[in-house]
Length: 310
Ligand code: T6T
View 1: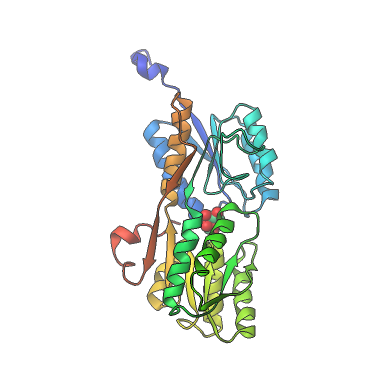
View 2: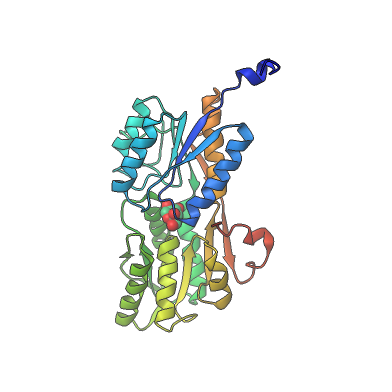
């Protein structure tokens, strides 16, 4: 100890908390890996604490417990645009800087002085509007630019999946031969998404395709297509890329998967908090990338590395 140099003795070890949307989702598990890599690089401790379901009622008490530990910064994927505003205000009031990762609160425009939800420092995430447009283009191509499709989605109020649906519908307006049926909301339950697919198919035997707007919506919709005996006939475009996607793309059950880069979100989330804590100014928005996975590239290591980790 006595031999420690001045710099080592002075360096503060920061504790950064990451509160995911839920703990058992490969997307957030992969985000955690990126956050841990960044924490290691800067010599910080990373605390990962979340709820077992994607739900503001479960997330708010977890957040309270995290605030009580008073970390140096909180990274959080808020599970609702409005319902997490007040719970997060408590962190800001306690002097803990907040960065939202993946999802946002309010409008996602921070540090503007407008509204009551602009207090987070920064929003680090995929461009979900563009992701929805990418999904629409992939599905339009897969179905030969005609037929009925629908969006399998989580629930209204989630910033990411709301924007994906918006981007998807906006893009589909350019495709006059495609009819977008009503959205089916599954509450992040893949079993519900599977049975909804079967009901929609029962009412529309000419269903051409479905866009699963997140991991559970997509896997559930794909399972529904398989259970209906329509694999490869009703085309599935998935948002997110859990390990099961590899086999599903190879078998033709899933046409394409839009892989987000969650490790990148976690890495830059931690670096953003660290930059702020050490006196640097930070951008209020940081956009991370996508990799579209399909039969053509699923065996290429440079693309397949974006399949999520377990
Ligand atoms: O799609 C991701 C995430 O971006 C979204 O906010 C919630 O669902 C996932 O975690 C996938 O399950």
